Image (cartoon, rainbow, N blue to C red):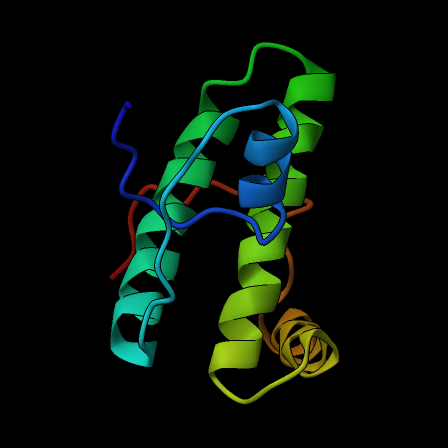
Length: 106
């Protein structure tokens, strides 16, 4: 049986079993959970970076967003609260829409 040793979505064990396969899992404590969520965020971002089509990129962005939802919940917030912070930062500092690339500053 191949070893994965990674955080997976909640229904993955059921999906594996429905395919007639077996798997072993464990429930992480909160310290392990946040560590694995952070690792998963890098994994999903890397998959986004390596996506070769718009469709694949959007699939990976959906995974990144799922991780952001889980991280917000872990930190005691809702995605709406994260969005409020994002909007406040956008108002104060702007967004990335104008594609400004800072070369130097004193």
